[in-house]
Image (cartoon, rainbow, N blue to C red; front, side):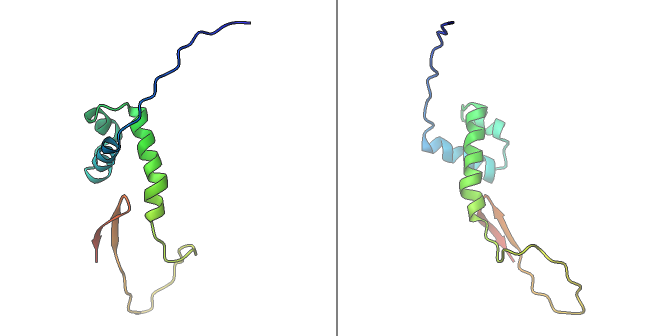
Length: 97
């Protein structure tokens, strides 16, 4: 048998304040994950994981759909249409008309 003497990696928890700052820089300021990670002195892989988890747990659950049916295309025959435009960034309301 071959013995492998590998040291275990030391994992360091990222403080919640850094996580919030990373999410703010990526979603609100529009920075790339790599740039935000460099500014906050985080590893790119760690920052990417934080963003992916945030997207899957928070952003996608905040998306609200009025129906479960797929979008349908219907011809408009001089009908009055009521269109509501809602802009969401990272699940937060930005603009509504």
